[in-house]
Image (cartoon, rainbow over all chains, first blue to last red; front, side):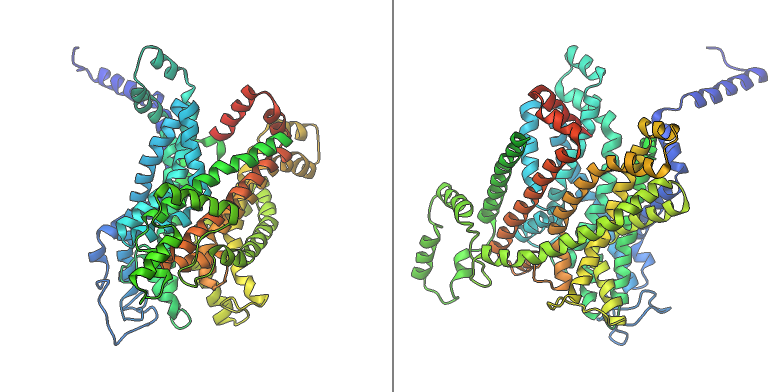
Amino acid sequence: MSKITTPAMVKLSKKIEKNANVTSNTPGREALKRLRKNKTAMAGLIIILIMFIVAILAPVIAPYTYTEQDYTATMQGPSAAHIFGTDNLGRDLFSRCVYGTRYSLPIGIICTVIGLLCGGALGLCAAYFGGKVDMVIMRIIDVIQAIPSILLCIALVAILGNGMWQLIVAIAAGSIEGMTKNVRAAVFMVRSNEYVNSSKSIGVSDANIMVRHLLPNAVGMIVINAVGAVSGAILSISSLSYIGVGLVAPTPEWGAILSEGKTYMSVAPHMVLFPGLMIAITVVAFNLFGNGLRDALDPRLK
Amino acid sequence: MLRYILKRILYMIPVMFGVIVVVFLMKMITPGDPVDHLLPANASVEQKEAMRDKLGLNDPIIKQFGDYVIGVVTRGDLGTSYATKQSVAGEIFGRLPKTVFIAVWAIFISQIFATPLGILAAVKQNSLVDSIIVVFTMVGASLPNFWLALMLIRWFAVDLKVLPSMYNGTAASWILPIITVSFQSIAMTTRGVRTNMLEVIRQDYIKTARAKGQKESIVVFNHAFRNTLIPVVAGIGSGLAGMIGGSLIVETVFAVPGVGKYVADAVTARNYPSLQGGIIVLALIGTVINMIVDIMYTVVDPRLKTTLLAPSSRKNKTKVAKEGA
């Protein structure tokens, strides 16, 4: 191919490139564009990103460590030195809330990912193979669904014991049922497409069809539900910590901080107010972003 | 129709059997020896062995499982509480009315508020009213309910001193728990009603109704709203099931002596028989509610009735469509 040399040709080639960009708007890019225009979704995303930065930079942002006790300043209301006030042991609540991002956020995401991997595999198999496989998987899911998910989590923590990994296993297990149903529904929608039948007829293996053809086409719906599931997982973590299973007392997890603070609520309401707000803001952010994603990928519903 | 109802009731049996299997497995892997919890600390080895024989803990696992299933199914025997040495089933059924009372009131209140709010938001889509309602549903669904409960206690019990902060048997002490549970439910139900209403409003028959000059109020209520009733019915059912599951947290905060508090206490005291009994009872309630919802579906949605009663090839298709949606 000869090189473009004359100015006129350069101009022309640029024009072609520009047009090519305009016409090559894939559905994915269209969705991204709609997502960027959605102010509430972007606000959610920004809050999530800020939370992540806070989690990473926690030692820099927090003015005190989360265990530092100052017995001369217990249960003080918000002030310049302690913007969220202090707790009954004189620990700085702002620092504790800042360190709390290191628990709820990653644990919520890890639980969702584990739940998605397990539930996703089940849902994919159920939707792809159908028939008996589908029936067996769905009957198992029916049984799990019959047990309220928070009860299932609590029962698992009661058996496994308190601790972070036990909590992750319990919440992930509680989310499998929903994930299986979502992935199954998403795959169902793309399963009947002709390219799936074509692949089958030319002898592509089942695993290949599932991973290469079904998953990529169902991924939009799966991601939307997963983002929503993160907020549910964060709520579950704090609820369990609040009733004293999962992450307990000295851990600066928001639910655990709240649980410590509730005893002193009548004299020091800030001990309950701020950790609760942190949970609420994080959950709202994930919900906003999740809804924005849904609107972007399925503009019909907007 | 009767055949469908019967089938749906029979379908509960394998699900509940599955739940009992899960609970039995939990029993097997829970740490600690139940005998230590049921006998005084100074019991002799012989006494423990005798107790173990009595409880059937020396039997082969298959026989233990069989005895357990028969006990649960025929006698409603859910074991003995470690804490009180009383029958778990008796304790749970004594507490059930309180949990159900809160859930039923909360459902009632949330439907009263959510249906008009959802319709209003959908009819005036993208207006200021709609935005406010959408923001409310978003925030309401995201607030942790134990936090909301504590904030309500702070306002109404500590600052205003108008309501008791804890359950004490008076009518006034029901108010805060019911508000807490309904608040979240209102938010979620409003959202559901709005989404469904929006979907229905876009249908061609609504356009037709408007085009032929029908009054807007009739279009909204007669044509659109009646078709959003189906998800509303589903919402009541799943909401009720969710509330009974979620009663755990709210009852703990307000110290309401219902099933939720019973189970939460059982967890902190490592009182496994009570926890496992609670799982079976709550799962049974949830399953029954789901069954009733499924039957109600066919009542509210005549289309479903015809397809469900049609030959089996069509039934499978609707099932796929329903579950795929």
